[in-house]
Image (cartoon, rainbow, N blue to C red; front, side):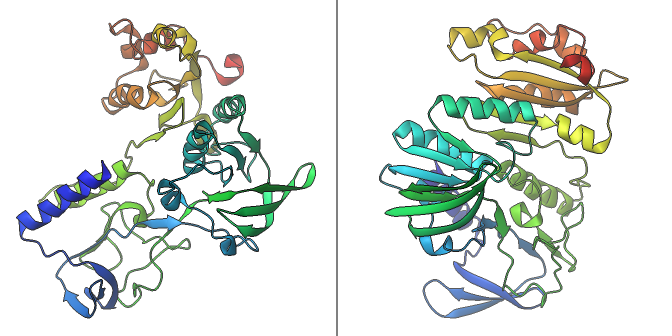
Length: 377
């Protein structure tokens, strides 16, 4: 799929007449870039408008011995032509979990080391607990509240980690390390200050809601602009800039961004979860049902997980929706559409949905009146 997409984009460049220059660039003046070409030599480019879409890369934590162990990131992990004997995954977020589970199913012994108190730390605790149960059922070792003290050895051969846990210091040995501990923007040493382009304290390019940087006629899009790090968000960034250049008035303000983690079962969310609502001081009610109550999951023998919606306390407005289960990534689009239309949850409750489908679960979810959090528990 990726190879096909690259070929399509290359053809589009060729057909458009645009000049595609392959190399490493840095600003040497406002709107002026010097490129060290892949084929040798340099070239200086100056434009009236500049668009930055320079992405992010995996962060290697500053842990003694870790960088020297030559750990895998998601890039190298996708290029492996072998099954690791024992893969130690540092990080219990999206990337770590999406690699840990298939590696276990390929035959690796897998240990996930997460510094926080739960997997998928940005999600509600019921999501984290459900994911942990599923992973442990599959034979994946999960270490929470675990901080790596140091590492030694070489990933791909033999590695040893000392880890501080609530039960004291533990030592684990494995064959490979996969670092999935966050990402950092590719904004260092490319002359942004020379071009008058400011970055924030984390190194992401400062942009306004129209994705304009602090330099005139310079825009930033995608991961480097500090938004949610998903391909679909980067694509929407492009659409915002494109439409505004053609007279539109689009912004990133109040975008309803869907999230999806491709574990088995899938985790998908749109809008607020309980953690975010509580942090923002927003009162809410809860509708929740196990996926086993959705009849389609029984025909598929995929009954794990649950559906949960947050409904405003004083109205029937849908504040957010979380699905942990088979087909979750497709299901959230239904709720997202209702939220964008401003429809109350009762519209989904009263819809006639095809039987038996996963979407039919929305009528099950909303069959009962949503309850306030204390009652729901």
